[in-house]
Every structure is written in C-alpha cells, then in structure tokens.
Image 1 (cartoon, helix red, strand yellow):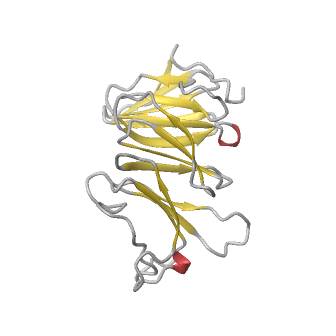
Image 2 (cartoon, helix red, strand yellow; image 1 turned 45 degrees about the vertical axis):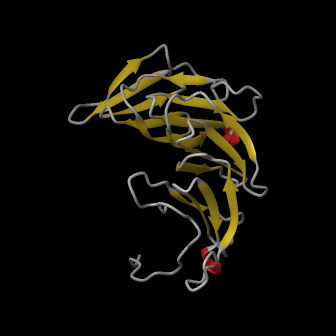
Length: 221
C-alpha cells in the first residue's frame, strides 16, 4: 500500500484544539459504510471545543469553510476525549471532561442516554456485549465501568477498581476487556472466566482470580 503523500481533504469547523493535536487530543474514527459498496467514507470527530462533528470527506472542498459537514452533535460541557461507534453505525458513545458517558443516535443527533457516576474525567470508551448493548468506560478516577444500554437505570452494571491510577485506554473484544493505566500496567479482564491478567513492563502476564470480575448479565455465558 502506498503511503499518502498529499492532502486529500481538509475538514474544518471545530474551534479550539483540533482533534489529533494539543495536549488532550480526541480520537478520530471512521464511520463504517452501511453497505458492502464503499462509495463514501464518513469521519466522526470530537474536539476540545466540546462539539462532535460528522464529515463526508468526499464533499469537502479546501477553499470552502465547513464543507463536507454532515451533522453536529452538541451536549458536552467540556472537551471530548474519546468516541466509539456501534457496528451498525446507528449509535455512538462519547466521553470527556463532563465525568459522564453519552450515548447518541447518529441520524437524529439526540442523546439517548447520559450515565453519571465517574468521579473524574472519562478518558476512553468502547462498545461490548451482544449488538453493542454494553458501553465500557475508563476514567481518571481509576475505574472501569460497564453500562447497560437497554436498562432505564443510570447506575453501572459492573465496576472494576483494580487500577491504581487513571485508566487511559481500553479495548473490548468479545468477552474480554483490555485496559491501560497510568500505573504502568495493562489489565485483561476475561469476563467468562472471571479472571484478570495483569501485565507489567518486563514481567510475564500473571492470571489473578478476582471477586471484582463476575460475569455481567449482558454478556453471553
């Protein structure tokens, strides 16, 4: 694959620190096409200007400010740190300095859920469970929290408190959740087995049984 050597499109509209730049960049994620025919690829961005924007780069013209903008999502009161979208592109989650987790409807730009509970800024977010019905968030408060999209409750269905410092990243793959923390450790939560595997730089991963890692109901057993 040839490495790109020229600018293809410039997406404008965000104010403040643009995504991908500055001390607290938010993640830029491609919006997967709704069919197998990849005609146009959209991009979802979050910024320190507290807004989330959906762009179509194919309709972006460098000389026209704001061209290619499809939708703007406004609800955050603080900068946006991370985004995650479901496989069907119907919903996405966003997190930031609000100490909350936001669940959005892509088409209508409405917030479907707002989950409070974290005691510090929320650094990372991802979808898990069947059909993306569980949202996983990691925070500066050193916790990982799981939220049920189908429940009317605003309380988390599971809280992991194993990190000794801010949870800076996470990835959900099937029944496993991998987290990275400022405490220098990577943790893999195996929800089926009820085990935590901890990896410290220079050491082997050590399996640990944990009472804090039962299998959530939202995950298949």
